[in-house]
Structures are given as structure tokens and as C-alpha cells.
Image (tube, rainbow, N blue to C red):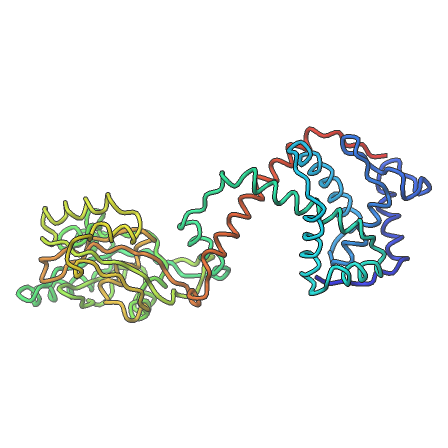
Length: 410
């Protein structure tokens, strides 16, 4: 908190202008005369003078007369609500609140009051300011805490927003993965080389429907917009080097070959820095992409919303059926990284297999860890979101009180 000495002449001029702006107000009425009433609760010129001095001591910027008057009106409205609720701070509570407030400036209460006195601020002015503020905060928490519920997804979204502010490239891709187990590897490479020379999106989509092993083949391999930073660095460079309609060279992945066609590219306002790491889980299902394997995967999908839910699915099974890792993009197997790039938190892919196609990989993205994400305190973010929701409820309540109030300016 910044404390400044305010020249008396400057404050007197500011107060004169604030009073003069009130309809019918004459400074000759005196500082202790009411300048406004809120439901018969008067605000005097002296209180306005004191609140302006207090704001100036706090380093508040802007029109101090207007800000001070608005605060005093709200204080009257809040006090009326608090009285109806039967809430009142005890003398001990007031003392504690004022000492806590002073401690924010690294001063004792006595030192803080002395400093304010040098600025012409009376002790009761600080007391009124602190009492209303603390009482209102406690009332809002008591009144609305049961209506506030912050999900993990909202916390993650808030972290993403905090990391934002720059621009990022998004790409519109189509994809093909050609199965290439050892007996079919040579034929798959020939097919992939032929497809990589295509420049028509319609032709690529037709090939996707014909040869791709991915669920996206039903849509001709078309994907929605994806941030290019979701992909591993090596693939990122390949994609950004494409022109519209061009296809990547064949990309070898375990038991398959991947190809991507660029259909569009755009710049959006979002975090430009790629994630430092990805947290993901892989649950392994016997049967590969057989009808039985896909049915089992669908049953798991219907049971889980978060990665933690997979522990319940894997309970009483061999530990090898479930892997959960947090790794930098560069250390994630390329086929896994390609699938994770397309997922949001809690989303699932069943496009991959292991053991020569005999095991289906139920792949879920748990989280994207932003650069420096290990330093982010999720509970701090959650507390901030709770405060924002409570502030919204409080603002709505205060607006209703104001709409019903009788406010008279003299």
C-alpha cells in the first residue's frame, strides 16, 4: 500500500469540485451537512472529504471525488443489508480486522494510524472503511458459498487463460494412418508414397475412407482446427512447411504409416508457447480393433470422465494394463503424441494398437502442462475463481438493493 502526503490546497479544490458537481449543493452549507442520503442514511461533506483523503493515501488513481462518493453510497447499501441479516463485528473483531489491514503495509496499527493522521485521515474513517469491507466479505461468503462450485476443468481453463495473451497458429488437417505390420509393411509404404503426392483434398479424403485405420476415415480423414503446438516439434516443422493441399512425406510409426494433408492455417489469440509436458494415461484392451475390443473400449469410455477414473477400471487386473505418464513432447512415442495432439483434457482416442494389432490402446489426455506449469498452484487458482463467483453474486445483490433504494442529493 502506498501512502502519500496530499497538499491541503489540492484536496480542498478536489472536494470543492466534488461538492459543486452535486445538484443544488453549496459549499457554504458546511462539511458536516448532508450532501446525499441513501434510504435516509446521510453522507456528510466531512465523510466525503475523509474518504477522498484515505483514497489519496492509498494511491488511488482517477477522480477521487466521484470514486469516494460512489464508495460511500455502496457502504450505506451494504450496511442496510448487513443489519437486516443481523451481522455485526464485535469490538474484538474490529480491532483484529484493523490490525490485519495495517499489517499489509508492514506497520503496526498504531504506526499506520499515525501515518494516516499526517495525511489528515481520522481513525474512525479507517475503522468505517475496514468494518464495512470485512463484514460484507464475511456476509457474502456465508450467504453464497453453497452456490459456488468450481470444477477441475474450470481451473485448467483458467490456467490456460493466464498463459495466454499472445497469438498461436492453428492448422486444419486431414489424416491417414495406414496399418503396416511387418508382413504388409512394403505394400503400405508404396501406398503411402503414392498418397503423399496428392494435392486434391477430395482425393486424399477418398484414400482416407479406403485405407485409413483411424475413426476419422468416416469423415474422409478430416480433423477440426488444432493448435500446431500440440504436435511434436519435428512434425510441427513438417506441417508448417506445407502449402494448402500438400501432404507430408510418409511418417513411420509403430505398425503403421501416417500422412497429413494441410487444408487451412490461421492465427488466433492464444498461448503461443507449446506445453512443457503432457500427462496422459493408456489402458490396454485385449482384442485390438476387433468388434469385441472396440465394444470393451466403448464400455470403458462410458465409465470414465477423468484419468483418475481409469484406476477403478483397472482394479484387480495386472498392473501392466494401465500406464500413466507425464512427459515432454519430445519423449512421447510419436504415434501417441499424434493422437494426443487432437485431444482436449478428458478426451479419448482408440486409434492405436500394440502387440501387432492384438492390443487396443485406450488413450486419454489428462492434462497439458504449460511452461512453468509445475509452479502453478491449482488451489490458488481455484480460490481465485471462487472469489470471482462470490463477487458476481455480491454485485447482483447490491444492484438489486440500489434499484430499490431512495437516493437523494442535496
